[in-house]
Length: 214
Picture 1 (cartoon, rainbow, N blue to C red):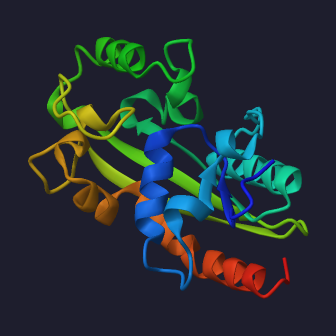
Picture 2 (cartoon, rainbow, N blue to C red):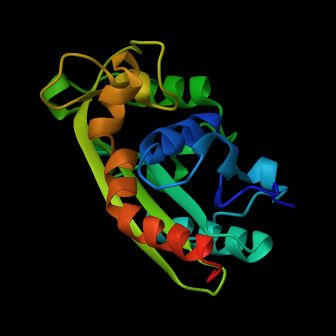
């Protein structure tokens, strides 16, 4: 069951995503203590939701609705990944399990870099894509999309972030996402874009919850 003070559940067990959402929401919603009232699926006692959709948007909505129904709280979910131009948009929705085991960042990076080994710099364009969804206990919901374009590097650089952050260098920058501070990354990231677009609906849902409406 959700913690008694919880007001919002993020449908993930990824600590990096929870940290990013808390940072994006900090100070945005009056009376919201993001460190105690924004929790993840593990703290809410919700099992993993199978990602059976075929688009980022479908998977985000599927997870958000499942968690909202299970907890009785507004739920946010995202589905995000890396879309590589020369791979026709792959890994795409399979980004987290590209090497065959979900969440093995090192193996995913190694496999992707091997696949792109003979590709020259001018053809290594790619984008991080994120669909962020909000679902309400009454069944309502909405979804927004964000995208960060850049170029894939030949070797990982930086110790920050997670996933494919060490190899994507955003357009116009000379550092990878893993070399940016949290504030720098959130300002431009695909996830930051999607969650900022979702923020008005999220604030409205939390305001309704505080008034006992949801």
